[in-house]
Image (cartoon, rainbow, N blue to C red):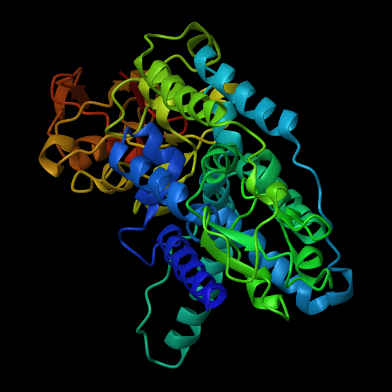
Length: 477
């Protein structure tokens, strides 16, 4: 019952989240993700997830984390294709490794190396894989169906404007996919119970969860089925022990046990079948460690968000004036909060957002940046500011977005076709939504003039400029 319920919730959630990245849902459930909620200072969501973990255990990892569910899907295929290779065994918790990674991420955050925590955030990793690997396949497949429909005079489907997000983004996403698929195929939820910082933080709380899986020593027949199938390698049949800090509540042990020796029950109530051994009751870390871990997590996030201009982050950016998405107040704030999940990139209707490669420097690889060679920021669109789960792109009402200055256009007289080839153009003025560009007389020619007070840096002029190189260039403010 619990196993089926967990699987159902997990599948519904990952399908909804994936559909959001693919553009099939207007409002994906990204606000439920732990790290983006923490960065957005969405204390209600963070508190709810921590309280749920304290009561039920790692339900977030079981059903709400898309990367965790992805690993379960890989493991499901292995069970169907290679059932004899499903041979897990109990492994002691790698305490030093788990908390060493968490401590290193805290230090990186304080130093301003915000891209390092984002590299291990499970939600962001899944977002990059969907945006750069699955979305192009989905779009191409859908376009093929639309073409087939058009060939049969139906014409009911509108094709996607499929855009390749770049070699760097593709290679990074492919690397994540290969590594995580290999780990999940061979070691189950190894990433979740050893490497993932969110798993370590929530695992610290789940050590003391009110409800936990328990093994009744007097009912267990020692068949070892639960241990062999435990994807977190946290069940020790010989000692009748379940390490609740690493248990991701897949509930498969409850479903597989032939004598129902495993129950999901109150942590302090011994089951009717017999007492729980002390080895299964005693936490590996003290409650003091729990409080220190939670306090360090929240304190480091608050300290990082409250920091002023960070030297490391600024020195790492080679492009002097990159154009940030509308809603990003400063580059520092944007770097602090953006996890490079690339949801805004996948949802941008004009495809003006792309994953940065070197524009922000090494510290900003994968974060969204405006690229006016691909499109321009639609004057009547504020979608990216309404869906960012970490508030790196702050919420903007449409009217506020239409006056938000994200950059300014610069005119290169020497590249303009009117000057070079004596043609009649004026594309920049025609397509300027704010009227910042007008055409004025100069030596008998109609040339563009820019009113910088009206220019918001939407990039429409640069995108529509027919010159190569462009006569109109937008730089960040």
